[in-house]
Image (cartoon, rainbow, N blue to C red; front, side, top):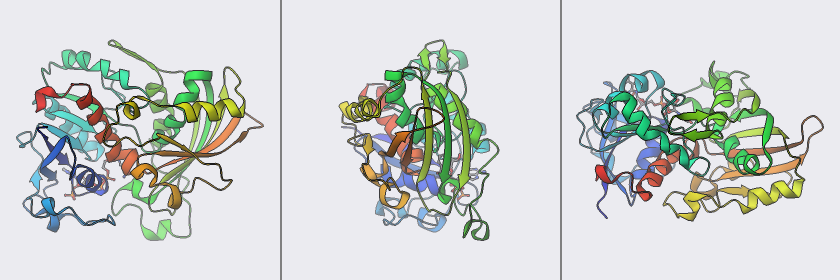
Length: 354
Ligand code: NAP
């Protein structure tokens, strides 16, 4: 198979490095461009990136020269790990110039004509793309986004339950890893021996609106949100990687705990059916132990792409409660975006970019 030329925007950062790792030996994509700020441009990737992953930097990128961000890059697809402000400035320009843009940033997630995609949850939301291109006058390029790293595990856990029983209300408390703030991220004197009960002004808003968009109904005209009331409490905790979320749920039709376990265990969504290269098998890992999932033990499940769930039990206030967890820089960021691209490739939607 001819590989598609791929660029990573924000390639030197925490998420950019994950992109580099996931794309280095990818069967569909070949990294031809690494781009970052003017601070890094002109340096080799080895010089520019303060490599923070435990696995070694892939040999083929070490001597690549980091490019400044521009719409004249030698690639057809870009994976964006830019900060939100730069994503807002650049991503639409890339799409207008004919690139396929797979973005991690928050800049366009809630645009009415932009798919906010988890391939297991709402692959049909790709039906927004013709409208997006018509609205914006783009003949080839487009933007597809993936959700915030905390919305992601909760939405994965809720998706099969919402389909069977209808989710009415949710109270969720996140315990978010330090790498969620990028590198160098949270100052050590704020993080060590501490919990920060504030992540960012927009974090709890994202936890409210993003799951509703993804679990909503999409037509070419736009998405009707799912209408779930969500109360989110977001906290930063001294964990390196892995966002854990405790979730209490109220349903329209009241399932038993066995019904819920069956819904999770029987879920075999599209990326798993298609056996996409980065799709975890299974998508949801249901833990039986009382004390799981835990970030250190469970974040790497399914190569960091699986969502782990456990501690399902009744809730005295709503109906049930449970704990879910995913790796924030893999499934919650770069891996989510790569899976979006794999889905479009498998569906023949990237033929023009070969
Ligand atoms: P990060 O570690 O701070 O990395 C930021 C990257 O963007 C670096 O490559 C940096 O390049 C580049 N950059 C900064 N300013 C730039 C500019 N003015 N022009 C061009 N490039 C610039 O951040 P991150 O955690 O990887 O986050 C990247 C994006 O992913 C953000 O939008 C974030 O919200 C989103 N996200 C992050 C996570 C997570 O868990 N960390 C999860 C989901 C989504 P230099 O090295 O040259 O400065």
